[in-house]
Length: 467
Figure 1: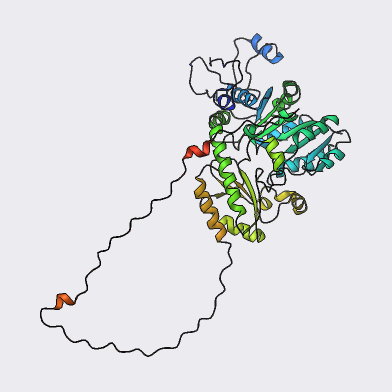
Figure 2: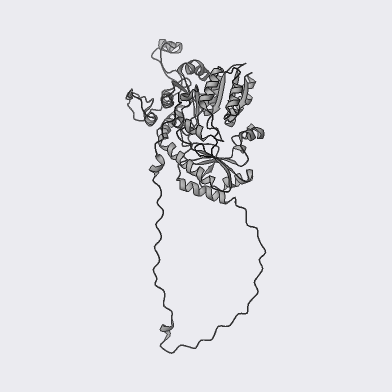
């Protein structure tokens, strides 16, 4: 069995390494991978009791699995939630959180700034089931007040938003939602539980794509839904059990391993992202830069009140629209073109033609997504190399010089060199010039590169709601 952790409060890094750990009878160090579809019982009576719910025993990995349970418990400890259930993908988590709670005739109010697939669920899927949906600008509290003056059943938002890094006031919106009778569901993918804890600001349910920072190395898919135990057990669990969006035990094991280094990876990524945002802001090819902790972000104060750091995403707009954006991305030598984020490798995305293509041009305009918008997920490469790569790609956007007609200069007559007299016998060596023996100047020493430890600074605790 795993060592029982102390009852005193533990810090996030300890939870990331030790939280939820169980050991089999073999006393393994690493979490065991229970790669099994089903489980056996000591007797028919035990099987019956298990299905009745009077005895706790694993039944089938679609319902629960020891490796999956370890990850659920670890995430719950990290988030400060009472319970957690895992799904095969982040979108399965969003879908389960919404459809498990809603029914025909219900009403949803959602922030307009949602990931493309989340936007599709709210705008297209829910109305098919007779569920009304209304979008508001997430940063406009007056719109939230107007929308929530009418009873609602669920509020969905993400903050910072994908891809424009808009912030939503979690405490204010949660208060308005609860007064309207709604459950508040927050997509916290961009912030992670290390930078922001929405439950402490009044949210009820948190959803994650574990594919992003929590795996962090581009290996597996996974999703999570966290909230109060009563809601998870009575509302979410029956839906997950019977519709089957189960997470593979293998994927759960990989994500458990990824979590062990999240507290080391994320501060480095945040620091590099902040430096890159400052660099981009100085470039004439860039029309604007969005990063939550920069002074020019329109909601910097709110970001600092809710988050421990600015995150690993930088969004910027290059001048020249889609053509310039594509030329910039195609010129990158280190950063990859991809629609993923939160990876150890830096990734560039063109939202208008990928993640947010299907929300339509009109909706993209409302979100501020232009054809020149690029979302940069900053990874773990050396920040100086990343800046060099971005700089070279921006240099490629400079207009080509206009060719000019060259006029040949007039030909000057060539003067014949004077005829030199032959040297006297025995004086040839004296006539030869001596080779210079000046010493080559030593090269200047290369500039010192910053230690990796500089980029692994411990994050401050995520802010709490002020009462």
